[in-house]
Image (cartoon, rainbow, N blue to C red; front, side, top):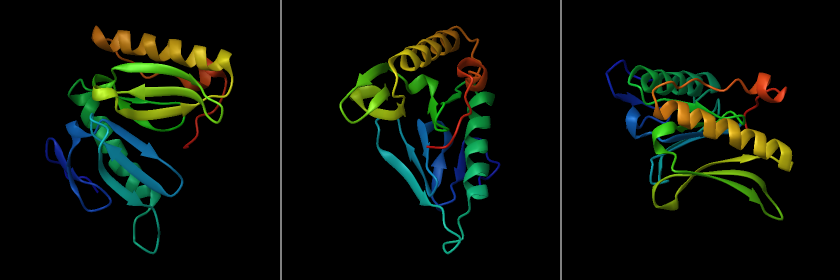
Length: 160
């Protein structure tokens, strides 16, 4: 669980992290990984009852990091795939139409990849890219709001 100190807390892995250094949180069914703005992994935890790390522990940590970002005007953007990326760390959004993977690549300093949103259709990719651009522009002028992906795309968000 995260401690209630201002900018430091313990992740479910037991590592002590500075919340403002967390540029992205990538979640899967069995793990959580945090990266800094250079794209380096700064924390990873496998979610397993055997290790005593539960999805509730991870959810509580994510809430703490997200709440800290909102409180200090450095929010994390909740992506349609359930992952999070800190707005101030995003330097580029790229629509990717590769043979095996299609979606949006989220880049930070030094071309580091902070996230990827898999979106198979061009129309949906363009719609999501437009929403992300609008959200980042609003953040830049101090009017950040989380996109309502359900309303925007008429889909439910899910953890990737």
